[in-house]
Length: 171
Image 1: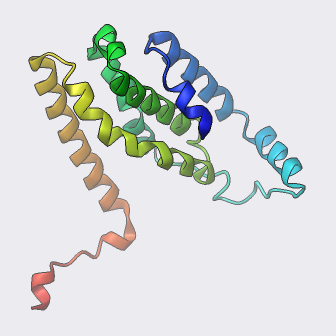
Image 2 (image 1 turned 120 degrees about the vertical axis):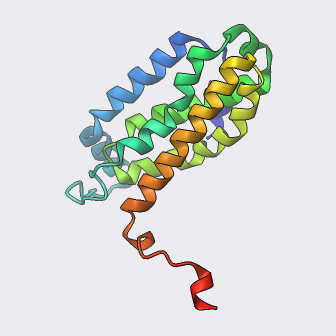
């Protein structure tokens, strides 16, 4: 993960977004050769017939990881590029979105975006402070509303959470 520091310290631009998305889409269609290469390096055969290795990941989870790309539409990139911390956080969130897109057909590989998704929570306040008040209020409202919908959808589809009962019923 040492290379992430250098990758994420470059200036924010649409070219960077296109580069990340291109690499992600190439990796998305290259699972078989990628797993073959890993098998050769490990000197072991990887079972790609396993549903955990080549299954599917919820598209909503991938969409949530892509929110920073949408935020770029509302940002003045010059303001963002002047603040090193905000630039680093934004770029690592773009990297996170690219990893999510590249790994969306493999639950096994989708674990990698967990390592960079924690930076989103640090990025939002920095980015919101760079927006004008109208865009910021609109975007915060949009973000909170859709995260609540996403959370409700995820909980309703998790069998382990469907039998929720209030703790007060047991008192």
